[in-house]
Length: 220
Image 1: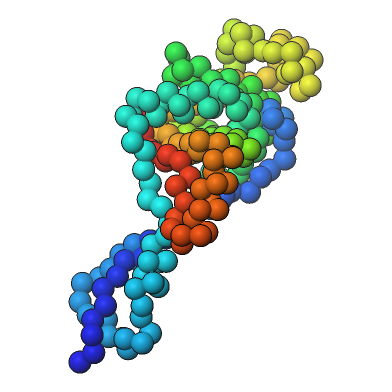
Image 2 (image 1 turned 45 degrees about the horizontal axis):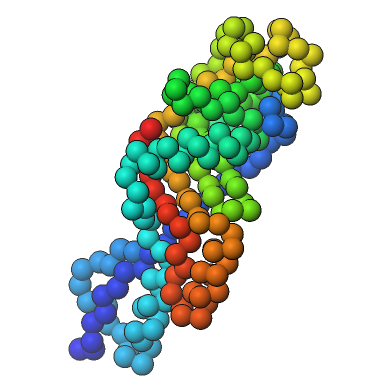
C-alpha cells in the first residue's frame, strides 16, 4: 500500500454584488478529511504543500475595542461606501455618502423616496456597507439592519451643501432618511501603500505570504 498524505488547503472567496445606477446619494483548509489518500511519492513535494498554504490567516493583535475605534474612524474618513441590499434573489450595490454617528451608534444616509433599494430594505432589512481606501490599502465592512423614515428634523440636521446636487433644499419632500444600525464589522488595515509594496516584493523573493496588515472581525 502506498504512502498516505494528509493535507489542508485554505481558500477564501469574496464575491461582490453588481452595481446599480445612482450617485453618492443614489437618487433614485479544503479541510483535510481523516483517512488515507494514496499517491505516488514523485507527484507530491513539501514545496507544493507550502505554496498551497501561502494565503495569510485572518489576524489582528489589537484588542476588539481598538478595532471598533478604527472601523468607525475609517468609515467616517472615507465617507462614500458601497451600500448593498438583497432582493430575495441577488445583491444590489450602489455608492452612497454615509453620515457616520458613532455616539448614536448609527449610519445615516439621505436617499430619494423613489428607488428599488427602498422596497428591498422594507422586505429584507439586512444590509452591508463597504468602504475602500485603495490608495492606502485600508478597507472596512459593516453589516446591520436598515430602516427608512421621513424624519424631517433629522434630515434637516444631516443636510449639507453637497446635497443640493440631488435636491433643491433640505425641505424637499422627496428626501428620505435611511438609518443603519451596525451589528458586525470587519477591518483590513495596511500600514500604507509604500510599506505594502515592500512586503509584496519581499514575499515574491521568499515565496511566503505577504503580511499586508491587520484583519479582524468584531461585533459592533
